Length: 427
Image 1 (cartoon, rainbow, N blue to C red):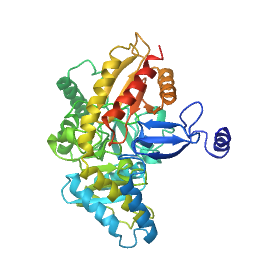
Image 2 (tube, one colour):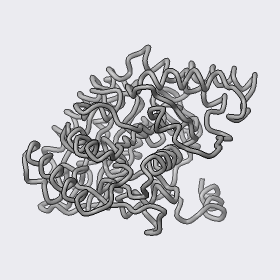
Image 3 (tube, helix red, strand yellow):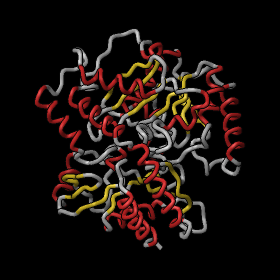
């Protein structure tokens, strides 16, 4: 393992983050478990950053990938592609966007990049509104709309980005308000901002902020924003890279918690749909999707191998009601963790929905983030046989818990017990 780590450091960028003081090589997985190169087994509560959505080595997906690889792996979008059409049809129907069109990419970053291209072209504006504490990818344009300093290495951007309040319920200038007053204050702030600037192209927002620590506004905030935006023709881009496909339990898409004003103009997706294969994409109505007046293709977006995986994975998700499982098992898990957190002064908040749960850590007696504690819990959980993630934005530090959606009640109890021990151990 030390040899592999040394080789990693010699040939890969210094800024390529690794978890753990002694980095982990994962060699294989099955169900909700993975194994490292030393044969240690771990319960996986992070799923390759919310990407292993159904299960590791899901037979239906591995079979579909193997059969497709035996026929043809790739041909590009210059040729008709049956698996791509079939998956696009299913996603368009699930999207709730009228007359939807789907464009496949290879990642969430590329999906958001494409959404920004569509919105700015359609609106003939390079001004974009984004949420504070947000994360939208690592390309030049998506870094430019990311409102999280820890993941924004440059201020240079092709876009003019202005940041809006509301993505974090329990911090910021409106945190002391009740939910209705919080929404009203954020809407007033947005309305005031729009009065000072040229009309922007779009607002891009994660229904639950992923890298930012699984934070979210009260239900209905983005519906209220949409009413203001629609009056000015401004588009709403819902970044569903982490929240899509039923992970929140209550809804299939995260935006549906804000559905009063209808669906978003553009939805982006990635991660879970491929269950580890590289699928991202954009959904938009035909008028927006078809607004580009130059030729375009995608060499790897929609390639047959990944489309076969996506079809099998989505089919399994729907047939086995994994959204319902996320709601039921996730509800049990979050209540179990809240009961633990209520006893520990360094746990500021346990939040989330379904199987998308954040535990925010602070220095006891303060509201100050404690990133060292988050790292300590990460290490202790690993020692106990559990893998979790971490995140956070300005002056926050959170553990991120996002297991595959097929998690069982017994596995949820096992993981909660390990987390409880790790959290108590930082005293």
